[in-house]
Length: 231
Image (cartoon, rainbow, N blue to C red):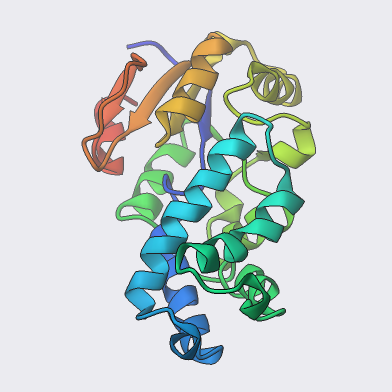
């Protein structure tokens, strides 16, 4: 087995449980802002629509077609449009409340702390994320895992987004490391895995939902604990 020195982790959907944390926040906000009275039928439905509309915006962001401000300006208006509700009805504080509440949530994916404990003594651990600087550091601190990581690279700090190889080149420069010394671990085949391939870095596709992709990762796992079979 090849010996790696640096493990590059994605954060959202790989370690930090984005869906669970976002669902809790949106459920709270659904009741706080009485969104049922505006025409959104339930908190569950609100979350499902959020996942679709937010996901579409992030896909645009990952190919540099929309920036941070664009995501935050369009996210909830797009959700209201999906319900055919006048966007002027979007509560003015809804986006701000979401951005304050969600990153402070603490839920991690199953096995996250256990695998970080297992790996920390043998490897240098780092984060490389397309998430925004102000929220990603809050997530790491609130969930209690910030101390595991030596270097945190975001799309904002690097100026590039995965799968652009330049975010990986930026990270390698910070680490003073060669591509062959690194292993990328992430859930998104189109950003984490393809980006690492572009940078000649081996990859682990964390694929808990048994998805399919045309991209061919170096390794694939369905549970974080399966990293023990690789590292």
